[in-house]
Image (tube, rainbow, N blue to C red; front, side):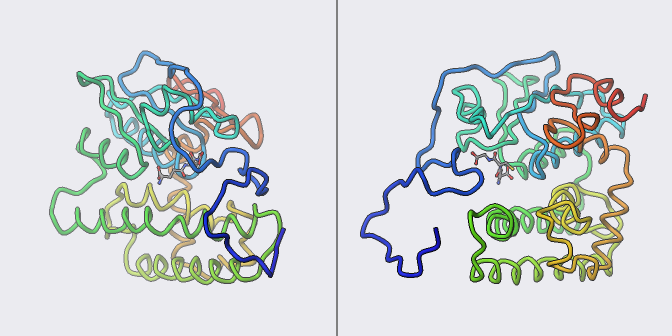
Length: 285
Ligand SMILES: N[C@@H](CCC(=O)N[C@@H](CS)C(=O)NCC(=O)O)C(=O)O
């Protein structure tokens, strides 16, 4: 409950009844809560994820790699139900000690390589397959600039704006104002970049677009927090152009249905083991 007279105590203690969506999975400690191994399929690449914007960055990349002819990018994608605490299994924690999706295991190396943090996964895959990451230093640096921009900026969109506008138990004016201001500033940064560039990095489609699109493209297309009108997302016309262009790409559409556990059941591929799993749902193939 909002308490205008709240004074922080000398030492913070864990109030398990703090409320709000996701309160049941938040803990002030890290590590596993239960012993359970991760499942493993036949491909070298094993993704443990959920079809949220952070998860979808990686499935878009994997589908783009496959569409570009990198057959070794074929993968198994296993759903991690974060509402049920799957991210706290011993298996998941060994793949990502931070207990957040997405996490990737690459079994083509000995020992197998773990990769966590979606930005790190995108870089790993781009380097492994030599794709969607320019090799000339200026464009490569600009790709990293926008990738790191996304990783650093989005907590203000998701954990700040989204949390207080959509998920907090009550509407509080102060944080909603603060984060709406910041998110609109971020959208303006993107809009100005996309006014002069087809993609974030000139005319090259890179992992930076794949990282930024699920969050800011999603916001522009009215898919996040039912905030399209509140944030006047239509006014960011260059972000709109770019988002619609990416949305129309087949690998983007394919990546967005993987590990999706909500919405129309006909658009969900809970676990993905082959292209056919997506074809069935999207009516392709
Ligand atoms: N910086 C991380 C953020 C990942 C993240 O926040 N994942 C959320 C879902 S989108 C999660 O797994 N939350 C579960 C939890 O916090 O327990 C990344 O980009 O990989």
